[in-house]
Structure formats: structure tokens, C-alpha cells
Length: 209
Image 1 (cartoon, rainbow, N blue to C red):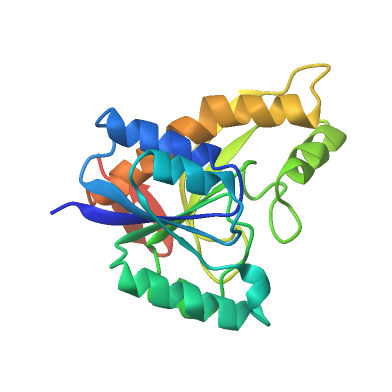
Image 2 (image 1 turned 60 degrees about the horizontal axis):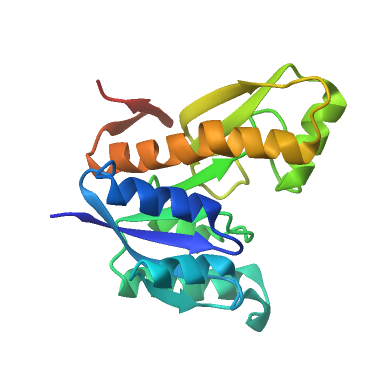
């Protein structure tokens, strides 16, 4: 029985595309993307889903007064879609504890830096890469982690690095990290989860050999 993977999006959906491509190549073992839920009606990620025959839902963030009421609507949709795994792929809303506790160690996110560096509230998109370059780090990368009630604080599943090169702009660094780390490690982490190959010991995630 394949696990139902529900992907939450807000924008272009490049990480969603990486997951779709990986699934088509047979790289996601034991799981299937069954629904894409967007916080914005005009997110291009919805087109990517439709082009690949994946069901979609739109739950606009702006129609809800606060994070809690929005998260409750998301929770209802996840329950209805029988989610086994939730993947945040450029989803720009921090979910309330009602979702993170119900789906503890079942929500995966990608953060475009090496946690615990350049993470937490306010660190998203190009801002992460701007800060990394400002600091002068020599390597950066991305972290695939479980989501809990705090921003970017859940158990780390996988990390990958790229070199920071002289003359990098935030946009160039972002692209290098996406191509070399995010688009490779996110499908890998999803596949590991779907094969029950991630174990949690004392709040930390370990990949079973």
C-alpha cells in the first residue's frame, strides 16, 4: 500500500516538480503524490500538479483571520485526503501546533541553508542566501527536516552542501543549492520516509541502513 503524499505550496513549485520527476523515474518508493494544496490561487505549482494529473485544492491564506484558523482548515483537508506524509514545498505559512502535533514526524520541509545557521522566523527565500553571503560563509546548502511548532527547529533528516564562490549573488547561490541539494535530497527524504527508513531516537532523526 503506497503512502499518500500531500504537498503544500505557495509559489512556483520547483521542489514539487523535483518530486513529480522523481516519482515518474521510480525514485520515490512506497509513496505517491495524491494532492497538492496551495495557499494562493495563482500559484504556478497548481499548474504543475494539473499537468501531471494530480488533484489540487486551494485554501487561500488571506481568507483566514489568523494562523490557527488557517491551520485548522489545512488540517481538515489533510484528514480528508488521508495524508500519510505532508511535504512543505515553498509553503510560506507557519503551521499552528494543531497540525504539527497531529502530524508529528510526518511533515517534511526544505530549508535553503545548513540549520542551525540562517534559519528561524524571517529566514526564507532569497533572504537566507543574502545573509549567508553577508556573513562570508564558504559553504552553504539545504536541510531537509521534520516540522514541529517552531520555525526550522524539527529533527534534521538530510543535509547537503555546495561551495560558495567568489562573485556569487543571492540568486546564483539559491540556484546552485536548489539544483545540487534541494531537488536531489527532498525526493530522497520522501522516499526514505515512505519506506519507513527514518527512525526517531530522542527527538533526532536517523536513516536506517
